[in-house]
Length: 408
Ligand SMILES: *Cc1c(COP(=O)(O)O)cnc(C)c1O
Image (tube, rainbow, N blue to C red; front, side, top):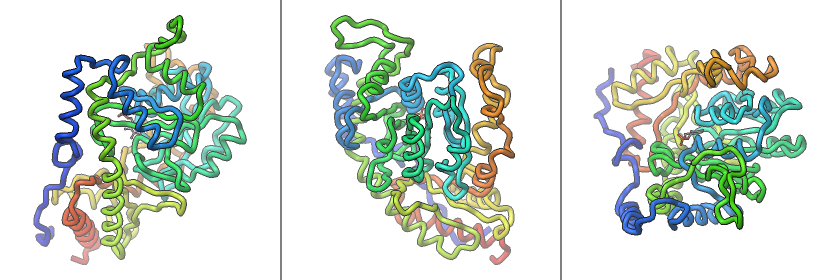
């Protein structure tokens, strides 16, 4: 192993080293606590957050909720699938984006991804649409927006609601428009490791009044707060964000633009450093998209670099650079939930209602996904990295590739 590099401790998004949590958040939380009102139904912080987030994205409605998973659940509940209806989603995403589909009695139908970006495409979505498709959910993976124009056109032409999962893509744009506002509903996560955080938390945006009404009710046990004669109008949970998180979120939101700018700037530096490293490709970003680098995902050609991503990850560990070869290891549909259809008791509901083709979760149906996961190495990314940190990562990759190729 090379001794060229002196070890650097990289900032981590799991603690203070890599999070911008400070006096602003403390002041806001103190104010929330001293107000004595910690529920968003009466307090002012969550309302402020919702107003500011809507204004930032230029949308009519924004709602805060308890997690990114809850945000996706609200979006699915808003489109109100019948049991057994299908919701097209992506094979490379967080389980928090998939479980809500099953909880609403709908069937997740996976679209394959473009191996260059790990994102779904209009073609891969079109290939799995059926007369039972109730909604499409796209994920802008790692902060890199999907190629949206053909996807939006497809959804509009077929009259299918389009949901954008932006848990990893705060600040991302396509054609200058904010990710989350190109479709019908956008969802965001404020979990510990996202661009900004409240520990746990989520946001949902929409311009559609009817969808907004259902989202509001779904967050609030179906209870129509503010109605003349409120009632529990349909089955729903309590997905509210508390004022404590709301206070942190209001302060965090002020820091989002700087974080996004810095992440993009540092990503440009790493791309420079990796230029000419054999077998390594930097993220592919379409000409209409702005990628905001939740993570920095490189592709490695195992024909050029022996042992490929696994080898590089192993060598980088010796530098205390902890990367994720193959990201989620296996496509979402290879998890037990799907393979064994483990849902409610022994029922397998709602899979029992599915068309067999819709739940054909075999790897060979997803060549893009297999190719994508085989070749990617996900590098932690952080707006608190220094330029020296980025040089360290770049050198670490270069040295690892050279070592594996036997030229060092
Ligand atoms: C993190 C994440 C979620 C879930 O968000 P939580 O706040 O962890 O519930 C959903 N989708 C994607 C793409 C994510 O990265």
